[in-house]
Length: 148
Image 1: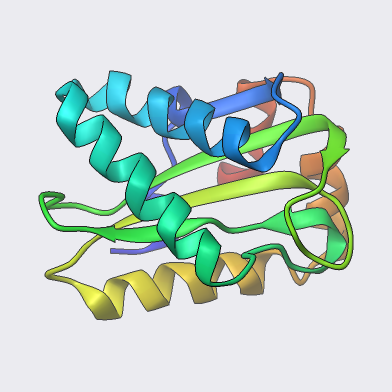
Image 2 (image 1 turned 180 degrees about the vertical axis):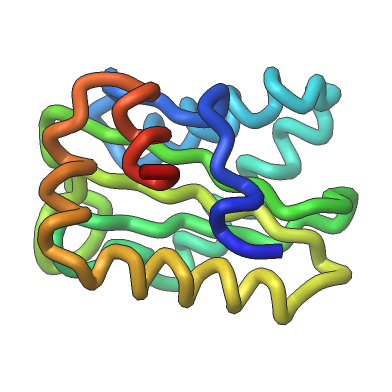
C-alpha cells in the first residue's frame, strides 16, 4: 500500500481550528474515528496511542511539518489524516508546525508504517509541494495536490 492509496478527501481538515498539539491530534483522531465509525473506547485508544508516541519525542520536522503517528492493534488497514493550520503551532520541534500528517498503521504491518512515514518525508522534501500545501484553501485543494 502506497501513500496515494490512503489519501482520502474526507480525511483532510483544512483549515484546522485548534491551536495546541494535543487539540490538533484530538481533532484529527476524531475525524478518523467519525469516518471509520469507531466506538468511544477505540477512539480513546487511538488518541492515547498517538499521544503516547508523541510523548517519546516530537514528530515535528523541518518546514513546518509534523507527522504524528502510531500503530493501532485493532486497525486492519493504514490510514492518513491530513491537517493544515493557518496559524503555526508549537508541536515540540525546533520550529512551529502548520502541516500535519497523522499516520495510523496496523500493528500487523510494521513495514507499511515505515514506508508511509518515508513516503511523506520524501514528498515533503519538495519546497514547492510544502508551499502549495501551506497555502491551500480547502480539503479539495489538498487532495488535488496529491493527484495532479
